[in-house]
Length: 368
Image (cartoon, rainbow, N blue to C red; front, top):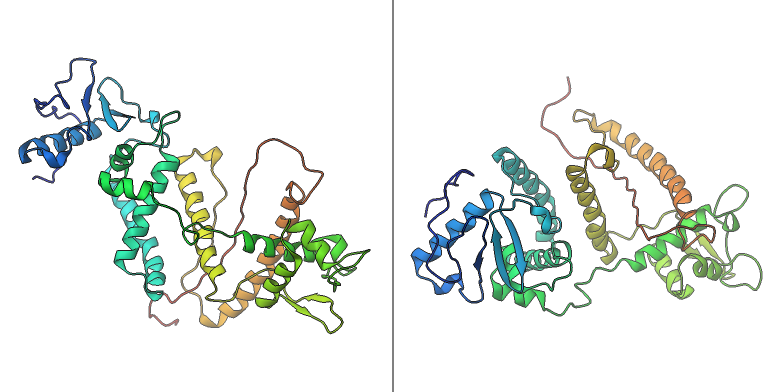
């Protein structure tokens, strides 16, 4: 089978004699039902013809409509917008090559992490299949129509058997991402360092009694900023990561202004999923949207810095980055309806602002 791609102007292959894929009259519609005529049940030559049809239709930007497990092709329409979030295939080889290079680059640090934690090819492949099916179901389903196994199979390239297994699998607690504990502990600690009720005249977090009938207390702080979670559970978590300490008289002192789990803890691995996903989603958004609708995305980088300078740079980033995040936290919390009774408006939106620092070795040349 030739691997060369047909040009968009190429004539379509001869239509098959099967009822599942007939000749297309002008302005008409041909129907291929993968349930009635699975590719695996056709002679090799006919299966090759169907594959040629798929290539021809995709290269000519023919609309694909999914209905009850069948795939319909309408040659009179070239509008991919019918399928939510679907675009025509990448037409320029340079674009595809750039995308492949970028994916390879971002995969390398992820794969390095996975291998260090004992996740090799087989387990990774299963995770990729799960994610493919989840994205197809959540982002590419047709409104008002039941998601079919065949539709998922066509979108993801999986077999119908694999698509059915993954689409109908039972989600375990381990599979469902959860950062609720992280969010609540972080919210309590940041509020403790900025809210006027819980800071002293110097702007430092007050030493709080665990519970009191009047005045500020740790239990009151948790009830106000962490919802219905028990104050003892939040205190245990903050003590575990070294963010607070218990004094002999029972009061609680804040030792940190930000919640950062210990290296290797489960929470840090959860952050890997949520933070990196947000960053990739931001870049994806900025690729797809016009300039006036793009999100803020900036970085500064130099590749010939002396090693002796980096300690000072890390201190600057830590100090100024923390200050900026605290300012933004105060601004956003004023409008968050979970923490402010003065915020009104419609809908429910999530916004995230992140700052990160990275360094590594670059080349072997010595500075002159």
